Structure formats: C-alpha cells, structure tokens
Image (cartoon, rainbow, N blue to C red; front, side, top):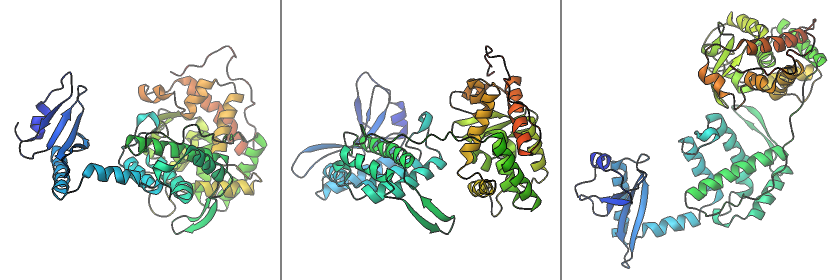
Length: 429
C-alpha cells in the first residue's frame, strides 16, 4: 500500500463491509472506510505489555489527511515513550468535570459542530444565551461535579435550586452596566433543557453512556399572555409623542413604534438593515431570524413610519446605534422607561408582539395568516418561494397596523370587527 494521501483516499470507494487503508510511510496510521462512505482515521499500536490497541483520531472532513497524520505521529510517539494513549483518553474522560465539559461544548458549538433548531448550527445569539446560563446557573451549582458521577436526583435538585432563585444575583459590567440574573420557573426549565443538550454532547463524545437529565421534571414556564388594550396603546402613544417632542433618542421611540406596527421580535428590529426593507413589495425580507430567512408583510402605517425613518438614513441599519457601530441595542431599556411613564409596568418586546397577534385575531384573521405575519415556524414556504406577498397578508397587516396606529396616535381607530367571513380560510400564498 502506498503513502496515504488525499488522492488515494478520494479514489478509494465504499464496499459492502468496512475495510482499512494503511499508510506505507507511517506504520500504524490508517483510515477505515465504511459502506456509507464515512472515513475515520486510526492509529494502530501495541502497548508496553504487548496489547494491541486501535485508537480513532477523527473523521475525514473534520480532519485532513495531513492533520490526521500529525495526530498519528504524536500518538505513536507517546507509545514509544511507554504511554498508552487510549488509557489516558479514558482516564481524562472519567475525570472530566461539568465545568470543563461545558467549556468544550461551547467551543464545539462555536465551531458549528453542535446542531440546534432545524438541524443547523446554533446561532450566535443562541450561544450568548447558552453561555449566560452556563456561567450563571450550571457552573456555580454543578461545575465541580464529575460528569460521570452526575445523577438524575442531583439534576432534579439543581432545577429546584434555580427555580428557587439560589443563583440569582446582580452585578456590574463595563459593557452593559447592571446585569440582573434571575431564577424562576422559566430559567429553571430552559437551563435544564440546555443541560440535557450538553449531556447528549457528552454521550456523543464517549464521556458517559446515559443522559442523567432524562426523566427530570421541569417546571412549567409562565406563559407570556399579557396584551395591551386600546387604552394602554393610547397611553403608550402619548408618552412616545412627548419623548419625540423632548428630542429624546429617536431610535428608542421608533424601535417601540416598529415593534407595535410589525409584530417582529426585538432582535429582528434591533438588527434590521435597509437591504431587508422592500418598500415596493410592502414587506420585510429578513435574512437571519430565529426561524432562518423570513418574510413579513407591512401595513401602510408601518411603511409610512419606515419612510419617515429613512429620512434620517445614515448607514446600513434602520435603527443605528446611538454610539459606536451596529444596530440599536437599547430597546429593552427604552421599553422599560416609556412603559413605566405610561403606567404600564411589566411589559416587554414580547408583549408588543403578542398584542399584535391578538389584535389580528380580534380582527378575524386566521391562525395561518397570523403565523405568516409573525414568521412562525411552519410558514417557511412563504419566505422561500414567493417574491410578491399575497394581497390577503398585506390587507391583514393593513387592518392590524391601522388599528394600532390609531390607538398610538390617540385618534379614531378601525373598529375591531371580523375581517373575513368565519367560514373562509385565508390562504398563505
């Protein structure tokens, strides 16, 4: 057999049964080819006691031939010095702490090797949330535990501790000022879900055989069903009008108005670029949302607001940062500040999104129409295949935004009456 190279490996076809190709240039270095076409590199050696070992080095694709060869040289060099690389690997895995496992998990996820929603690599924003839950909840309570020793009972206690607020704290950072870490049912449920994913990663890495999070009871997350009434919209609108008159940050005011009139998620508005605004098509063509690429219809009131903002255009973002580069990051503070002035404590960006959907339902829009306007999962066909939105969706967005714009401006708004006959199914495309 000649020296193992990429050309030799690419020319080797799959067979009904797995087989090895060994390198003539480096004894003990080879690759196993499976019937599926999968290729895994190995180092074959004998220990000082004469026992034969075959250690996997990694999969072709994740490793090149040259990278695998260097790993094999290192591994076989350890054998010459009297070590047993496989035994050392097993020992390291058995002594792995949860804190170290979490570090490896984040590294793998950052490299796109951990798949999330839709079997796609996790988004950067998701990784930020994961890192926060690891640093604030998992590591403080479980970080020193050995992964192999973690039990289901310990995980259940961990969930109860997070729910009870044992990890809650407040601290200052240079970049963001004050950060509040809260416990509660929602934090406990979501952190337990992340811990289950980390343990699944550990199973795939051969650290453990069973997932200790399986079977753990998670608290029911509190449903965010708060919605704004017309009177509350009017109160919020008056506060926003006063803020505009006082020449407060126009980004803060416009961000809340856009959330109200589009039903978008907070990050979708914060990161909205002008290239994603399609005035001719009366829609937003979002490149990177929670559900991937997404298209959202725009009512006339939303279009008018974007036209006003366009007069201030000074960069790629619809709402540019007040300091530095990037999109406007002050939406949570703006919502908290103006909602308190309006006598509406406890509302957030999700409240405005839920209110948009609820108003659409009050106007008689079907669930499928509302889902398409909000960009919910299951409506991806809307964003993938059509270039001009269905007139029904634009008409629905018009009715919702007309009502909301009227409330926000404290003037007569469209009466809430069914937009379509009850027997009619509103199409998506």
